[in-house]
Structure formats: structure tokens, C-alpha cells
Image (tube, rainbow, N blue to C red; front, side, top):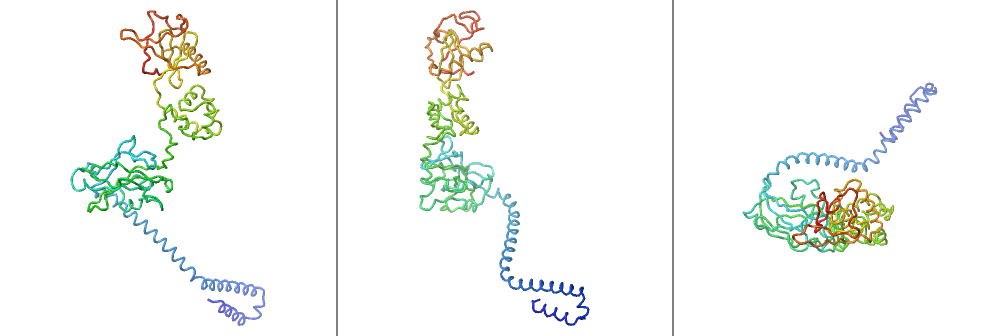
Length: 430
């Protein structure tokens, strides 16, 4: 109803009505309400007539999108079960044997963990048996780079379309991501990845990781659907980053910045260097001798979580077999391993492990150990005297009076003398 028509009706009602009745207060109120509601109705109708053509495309699009989403969900749920049931319909699949390292570097040859060759095998999808004969066992295989997020749920199945949509290509102006022998040939169902390397890092994609993929070469005319191989995800860093790579496990002679949370030429590196701590061995020795002093040296800039990470990494270090000694001046020699952990004591020509000592003797050793840690320069490498075949193995007699004994130990040469030990090529552990 348009505005003009509403106003005309209102006017007729006013004219035809009883003038006296219209003159009453109640009549005036009814007339005012009637006029107001009629006006609102007319304005609303006029607004809809004016704006409905503009709203119609928007409303139509919203409805179409909602209907589309409902259909997609319905189709997806309808197809999910048949897709799982079709697992056995793929008779063959390619697989990588061995995992790739968590981090690779550009320009370096791609190898499996522990420097082992990375292999691809063709297997039966049902029983995982290697396929060693037939046309497929000698086909060409193409190596590709995939997004690290592909198959994140580690599904056993994926479609050819899903695989293809996850292939990562080189950035504009860059070389192909993989260089080298990117097409290899199966021999009796097995092929080795011998000479490929990455030309670019993985930091520019959302997942920041790549996966390696392998599929039957597109040039091969095969009717069978062969499931593509997908590796574990990994980072690819620029080769120059390898110079600053952390070692797992670290070596004793590694620079201290090889430890986690200590950056080369960073604040912590400089603090340690100023204190004479240059290697992982130096760090471990200070950790053993004065843990709290070392922690204080690094300051509040290193959080407790960072400290724990650094210490945990340092403790992965493989120790060597060298022994070190500290002469107390009382005829007792303390024995230490390469990071100055006390592992034994020599009294006269007898050697005792720490665990063989009584509580009183251990207390004495702890006191002597504290004295040694105050003067670490006096802890020197321990040289073991060579023994002839017919001699009983003995440690060298330490300087000082031969009669000096630790409390509670039997005298040298007594019938109850403890078992002696030869300190050659091995380290006594507490």
C-alpha cells in the first residue's frame, strides 16, 4: 500500500465520521494512533519497494552459499565411508624406507637418518610384500616436493588429486626445488635416492616444512593406481646455516655456542668466553664444579627453561676415557673423569671406587674434592704406569708417606687388602 492511498483513506474516515464524536478526546487519540500506524506501514512499504531490488542479489547469494555448504557436508560424509572401504582397491603403493632427518640444508645430498641411503620400494597395498616382478617393478619413479602439512593426520590413504594439490613448486625466479636425479628407476621393486638436493629453504611456505613425495612417472603408461610415497616432514635451511648448526650429541671439543640456547657471538657466548669457558668440556667442568656459579654467570637473561635446555643438551656429550687426578698432599689421590666428576680414590697402590667407600670415607673425599675444585689447575691428567704380564695390576704409588691411610681402610699389604684395579682404557663410574 503506497503512502498516497493510505492518506486518502484516512481523510475519508475523518470526513465521514461524526463530527461531534471526532471532537471528543478519545476520538482524537484514536485518530492520532490510526494516522501513526498507517504512516509507518506506508513508509515501510515504500522502503521495501525502493531497496528490495538491491537486497535481492545479496540474499540470493547467501541462500546459495548455505545450500552449497550443506550439500558439500552431505556429499563428504556420504563419500567418506566408501573411500575407506576402497583401501584394498589400490593393489600397489610406493613407500620410503627410512626417515629423513628433522633438518636438511640446501645443497647437501638428501640422505636418511644416520647418513643411510634413502630407498623407495614398491609393495602390495594389502600385505606389504615387496613386488619384485612384473612391469611395475621396473618402472620410473618421479621425486617431488610436498607441503609439510600434507597428510598431517598420517592417513594410510590419499587420492591422486590430494597428492597433486600438495606439490610445492619453486618460487618465482628460483631454480626447481629439487636438483639432481629426480627421476629414478625401480629395479625389482627397489630404487635408491642417490643424488638429489634442495635449492631453496622451506621458510617461505605456511607450514615452514617440506615432505618428499614419489609417484610413478607421468611418462609411464600404466592402468593400475599406485599409491604415492610420502616422507616425514622436515625443515630445509640455507646451507650457510649449517655453520651454526647445533650438534646432537655435542662433542667435548665443540665450541660452547654449539649448545642449545647459546648463539654464536651472542650475549651468553661472550659471558662464557670472558670467564674462560670456550668449549663444551669447559662448560661441563664448570657445571660439575660450581653449577650455581655458572648459572649466575649467565644471568637473568637466560630463563630457567633455557638453562635446563642448555644443560640437557650438554649432558648428551659422549665422554672420553681420560682420567685426571688431584693429589691432596696427604698421600691420597682423587681420580676424576674428563669433566671433573669424582669417580675414585687412590691410596698407596690401591684404587677404590667411590661406591666402595664408607660414609666416613666419602665425607673425607667430598672435603678433598671441594679443595680440588678451588684449584682446578691442579687437576691434571692421570698417567697409568704400564704393567708387565706377570705383575699384579697396580696404580702408581702417589707422592707422600706410604703409611698414609684413609680412615677405615686396611693397611697396604695386609691380608684384608681390597681388590686392586687397573686404570687402563676405562673409566670408573660412581
